[in-house]
Length: 100
Image (tube, rainbow, N blue to C red):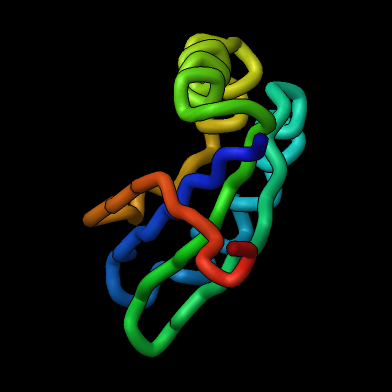
């Protein structure tokens, strides 16, 4: 079983380039904790960034991996250069309706 979380961010107008320059730096850290990026899309016209991240196991396993990731010094180091441009964030677990 794989659990997927959809993450949607609204960014400060005109700051997409700053966010996109930073975003790849966090991916190797996520991967260290068993996460895989399914997709990542930027909509510069609407200042939104949407991505999906997957982890093997159920939602409880995903949540436990997030807790370990959040507490890690590796994440802290990656976020030292984070451009604080996210004004709104909506995350939620999703199901692949085409896989049924």
